[in-house]
Length: 378
Ligand SMILES: *Cc1c(COP(=O)(O)O)cnc(C)c1O
Image (cartoon, rainbow, N blue to C red; front, side, top):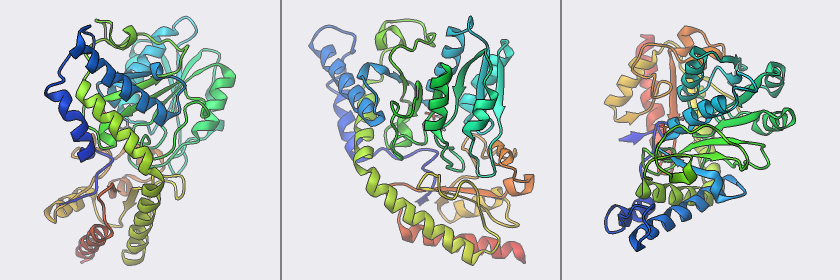
């Protein structure tokens, strides 16, 4: 199998699995228990919290709160900030190209009486800081803009938006699920107040994530119950997975410079072959400000669904858009917001590379795509 869907999920790496194993077996204590077994689990959480802190450039490990997934982090940040600030206002600014975890949290709040501005993006999928500035109102309490888009890989001007939010005293949440472990992030110098991440997008297991909440920022609880996570996120921690996430983020940070170069070269190679050998291939997303391992293309006269089917028969796993919309017949909300026609949006294919992706795999994928495109022309 050729796996080119790393934006959907990644395989747990061996070092991560090995780090987790003791916490699934003999080190099974509840981190809230006071005896030695519990204290050992608690220490493991402390270590992972420090690893995540270091990767984000956060000031203190106590600003990291472990959650059940990226979706929970997004839900918590948005609903929590909205509920905490009802007295100040009920207006939220976000973009049209966010992940559904953000969009649906906003839609939920709209039903409850909040107003949400969904900003347009340009043809590369990027939001402009100027547009964010123009949407700010006296009753704006939250700005939520994703770091990098999960479909087209476009990276947003996060630092500029952070500065703006800081100036106006508005909370700034960033869904960085696609970015963490792949591109450098610094919550301090980017002016980020809350940041969502998810382990399974950087070789940790599924079902574990974190929300960074800047010291001094309070948001309403999402889960009610025990005193875990400094009384802000109830529920016994998923110790083994959190340990795995800590290990994975540390390894990702160490390997990032080299991996960025390698993936950048691979993407450029794939794209140049595609554009040369399948005339009319268009790259979706920003040409430079993009995740290094993302190649999202529209092929002329090829429907995504048919192409995915053929690719699957050839043992190649990729995606037509975001994982949640593939399989359904709707065109991607991201591509439509970028101004693609229904037809172009329905012919998009997303290839996302990872640690084990090789040039040979990409060459084989391009060969299969050529065959698919040629068949269509007949
Ligand atoms: C995957 C993803 C999420 C959701 O994370 P889960 O851990 O799968 O719930 C949210 N936002 C973006 C941008 C993602 O890519």
